[in-house]
Amino acid sequence: MSDANPHPATALPDPASALTPAPREAIRVENVTCAYGRNVVLRDVSLTVQTGEILVILGGSGCGKSTLLKHIIGLETPRSGKVYIDGQNLTDAQGAARRNILAGFGVAYQSGALFGSMTVLQNVMLPLQEYTPLDAPARELVARLKLRQVDLEQYADYLPSELSGGMQKRAAIARALALDPGILFLDEPSAGLDPITSGELDALIIRLSRVLGLTFVVVTHELASIYAIADRAIMLDKSVKGILAQGKPADLRDHATDPRVTRFFNRGAV
Ligand SMILES: Nc1ncnc2c1ncn2[C@@H]1O[C@H](COP(=O)(O)OP(=O)(O)OP(=O)(O)O)[C@@H](O)[C@H]1O
Image (cartoon, rainbow, N blue to C red; front, side):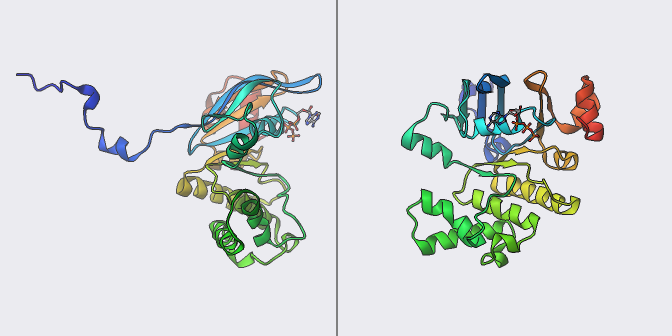
């Protein structure tokens, strides 16, 4: 008698793969065209981001990095194409369904965009007030936890102007984390930071990704950050109005055939 498993489909799963959930698609951008009036900035762009991945979007000035980000997070509507967040169609969602999808991700903008008249703690409590039924003590508890995750618990009662640039970025990340999102979008997190502070921010991004399993989409052109944090990089280009190259930064540096790509990854010039 053969000892082959007669029901291969019901074979026990490999213990290792049973412990590690298969990656899912956190974001799907499907044939998205971005335009302002008659100015088409990006044409027919498609990409996916897996859960837990850190994706960096880079490219020269004016190539459409911020534009792509704004279209992915629903601040702008694609001229054509669709954006899916965690399998849900954000582009066509309305009302409560749209609100629900928006609550599934956090965004920290380049400037930090904290409210200057509110303390750091009050800033982090704001999304909880807007999106959850939690009462004030519960909101404060959650906000303090988020501040601890970015090592700012000692600074809860400070005003944003009393913090250094790097601390303001971390506070903005704490606020973006308030609703326990699965995805964080960061627009130029290292802008205006010195290399050491920028490195600390990279370490925080990596820690949040590994510890919380967060998915990150980061717009940056800081080469050191790209090498430090990116699982994958997507390079946009103005002349192709789309993606010029994508892959692991080291692979793009060593194996890209397009001189614009190798130039960027070797010297940081675009
Ligand atoms: N709100 C807007 N209205 C009209 N045109 C816009 C708007 N925002 C961006 N653009 C145009 O879209 C193009 C891409 O701009 P975008 O800011 O997305 O580029 P970027 O790659 O993020 O640039 P940078 O690195 O300089 O920030 C530019 O030509 C810009 O002038």
